[in-house]
Image (cartoon, helix red, strand yellow):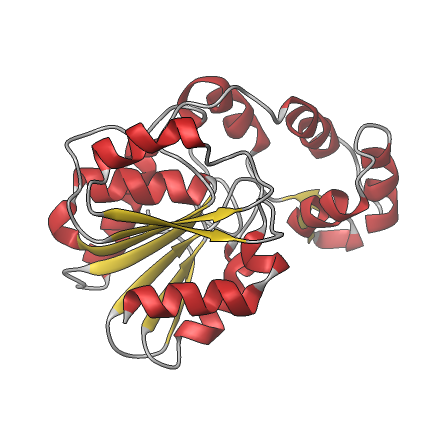
Length: 253
C-alpha cells in the first residue's frame, strides 16, 4: 500500500512528513514554497490523513512506507523533511536507507525516547471516534470536556470527515495509534549513524529538543547542525513560516 500524497513541482525530490494527529495539510505552506524549485511529495503517514489504515505502526514500518512510495514513483534519492512524529520517521528512513536520503531536515524532535505526553488527546479522540457525530460543533463541545486549548481542538478537528447522510467521522485510525503509542511511537529511531547533511530546527520555547539530547543527535547524525527559531514553540513551521521556509531553503541550497 502506498502513502496518500500530493505530488507538485519539478526537480530534486523533497518528501514532507507531518506529525501525529495531523495530515499533509499541516505542511502545505512549506510544500507550496518549495514546489517552485523542487518536486515535493507532501505525504499522509499511515493511519492518518487519507492514507491506508494498518494495525502495525512503528518507525521501521513507517520508514518502509517512504521507501515504497519512492520505489512506486521510480525515485532513487530524495531529501526528507519531518516534523515531530514525521521527524522520527524521517530519521529512521535516513538511518535505514542512507543511500536513498540526500539531505535530512528535522523539525523540533530529537532521536530519543520520550515519556508519553498525549494521554488526554488519545483518549478524547478515541472516545470521539465512537460517537455518532452530527456536526463539527458537537465534536468540539465533546472535546471541550477534556481539552481547554481552542487551537489544539481546531487542529484535532481537522481530522473530521463528512460521510454519507451528512454526518462526520474521525478519519485517523485511533485504535492503531492508541495501541502503538506507548511502545512504538515514543521510541527512539535506531540504526547505524547517518553521515549525510542534516539540519535540526528547534523552537526556542519547545522542550522537544534539549541540551541533553545533543549527544544522541551527534551520535546518530554526526554531520548535523541545529538552528533555533526564536519565540517559537513546537509548531514552529506554523508560528513563523517565513523564517522556517528560509532555514529549509538555505539548507537545501
